[in-house]
Length: 396
Image (cartoon, rainbow, N blue to C red; front, side, top):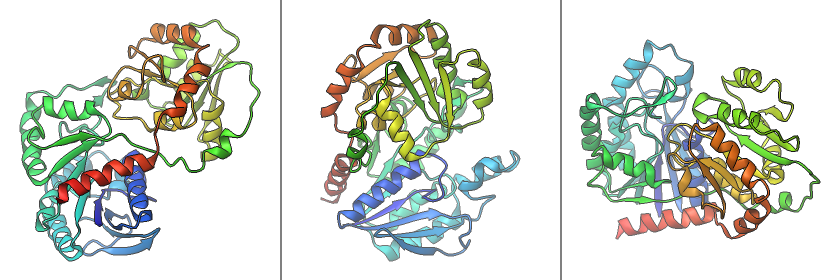
């Protein structure tokens, strides 16, 4: 089967988890013997034509769309450019013409579109040149609001009347050109349906997965520890709720409790000040994949204290793969991944006192929950099995 994956970004150009997920899918499909082509952007790619690269069994085609900047440069660009970029992004005729011609030449069996910002929504119209079924993965809320995270100025955004035209446009341009919507959480699918977006398109929740082939080398190690270790791994931003976790620690007068915070981000200085009088809270900064794996292994709980509509945090999959239970905020797609008192616990978001009570009440349960996680399947193999089933069913 020839699978064409379209993603606005693709490693090594990475900003978030969506492009890493697209790469994992592409590589595993190629490893299984499928022909895999990828269309993406590139900072140094030509504007009028594709550059190509053969790597890991995939053929990657990159282009720099005619726009204000490439998707990889978005975070560093001045604000005055972004409204212009977003306007062009609604439907870029140059992208449409070039990608349509390229899809026609590739003649794929299946087209799988991930994030599209920077390539524009014209990629969905361009896919119509092929008779191949088109699948779209929802990684964010870009079809519901101009803020894809539905989070701004420290709070969740509820799309209002002004967004209705925008949503209807997206439902028309995207929804009419796809055969199926998939997402790692039912929550994000339901949110789109509540707003009347993609209601006429078949949808299915397909959880993510991670490569578990090298886990045994870490599980075989033994670590001596007396304290209860809590772990946070991710970006240090307000939406992630690390301040809530630090405040929960302050409410727990337990010298044997430790919090290890891994990651980088704009809020690190503020968070360090918040925790400066608590020696139990330790900041590690950005760490290697090996050190991250070690920290998962020796933690009693991984804590996911998000205050935004997190879709399906990869940190939960990674934690489960190390047989470490999770304490997570009851928001977005997080509770779909936590089976209460079996694989972890949920708490009411933004409530440090409730989080503190959960930690205090269940700090002795981690060994029992870790045993339950032995049978929890978060492998990329299982994810790809379900993905291929979707591909095959749409080809029939």
